[in-house]
Image (tube, rainbow, N blue to C red; front, side, top):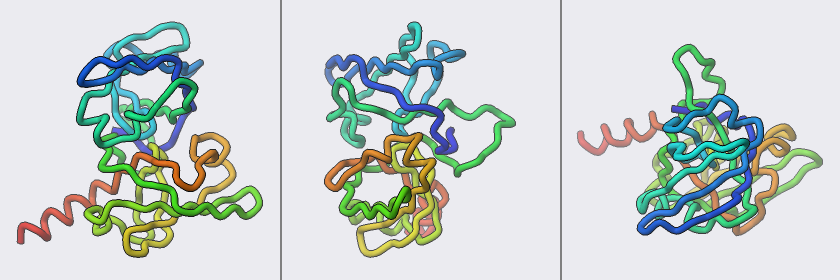
Length: 196
């Protein structure tokens, strides 16, 4: 379980195919201090298990399902990822409840920069639009954000200068793909509505 408040940015050092999955070695700097083998870490919103720990580096393995539902099948050397440690009992929940289970991949359709601020528009597959509501929550590449507008199969989010500076969202451009996790409460409400 996570909050969607990114702690650090990591850089992909090595990618290795391990059919049907892949292994990623990530340069994490000081972020890896105190992290142990078997810990859960959010990598651009996806909960993965630490399979190796070295000085300033962490390694993760992504299975077939993860590669199918995320942007990880396209990750390469030098790409940057958002990092967050899992919550511990008693930690402050500053963002929203993020499970680290990616629902789908979205595509950036528009970026509007206004000084140091930005507004991003993202397109989602049609089956997820019922889980989006204005002023609701969404995790984009692991970043907890508030939905501003929801129109058909697109939504917008407003990014403050801090978010642009300390996450990978600052470098997003039109056509880029992002990992999306819709609000867990919206999922359960939708499920209840369908079963009644």
